[in-house]
Length: 391
Image (cartoon, rainbow, N blue to C red; front, side):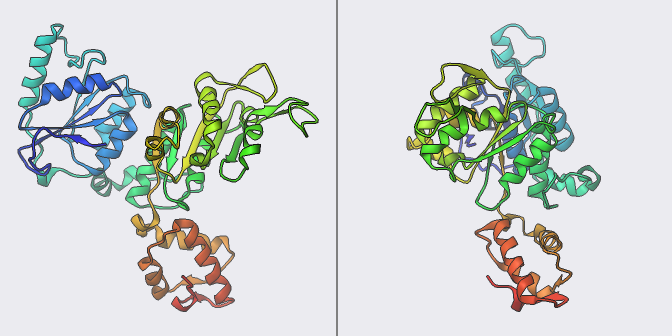
């Protein structure tokens, strides 16, 4: 998300008013750019509620212009969350079709004038008073009580952000795209979403798009009818149909062959599948979660991934931080892994220092492997020393 800035003044300037416009309507955002063009304005554009929250978690804003027809969240819930988490942000609701304020004005000219006049009277929050939401969390620790998710470990600011977004989207059927480096735990987010969703008693079907040969992946996903190809001795439903009523997790979606992406897009848009060799379209009720460590938008720009499929999957993106950006979680992760391995050994201060200084390119998965090796090397000792850590 790039800010639209009609001037070169620093975003940290106390004279600048930071305006966050939240709308999937590009035309509406263009109208706002025209109305707010001026020396005091910096307009940041977000196409969804989740994108706006990601921005707010890292950047202070003075005003939020909200289109109530955001695609991924209920506007009232989004409004309430911004009010609670970012009390300094002033929220103004827009008419989704005209971009005017919903404050009773009917004339477009008058509405535009009213918008500018109203915004012109708003004083930007002083820099020393602008706080990140995580600073607010530190001021009100009770707010983050019981914030973690099933299977997830971490009390860092970055992880609390993930927890909030995950809980918000879990009770809906919105398609979710989980991104992050390899080993960050994207599969755990998918499982957590399913476990706290209304579909929790229905199946969670997982398919790794990178682990199944291209020649077999279509049959695995969509199923086939008897005699449709050599070896099809009986009809079989696919993984998508098997997830009916529940959740389908498409792991490593970036490795899905282009030849299959159009069929996945059709399934997402129409809610039906057609088995290989069959003529009937079978209706399915499936919530889809996809995950990737690839830059799908970049791949789409190179025609290596369908752009329309990317936008259909990324309705609600959740980005997992790498371990190096949440080192404060490392000690808790270590303790959890040691318990998992059945070890009673404690981590020494020197060992923790060595682990904390590592860059962790393999993230939490790499940490797990390092600790498993350490418990083997330490054998029956009561403490894991730095000499037991093999990086």
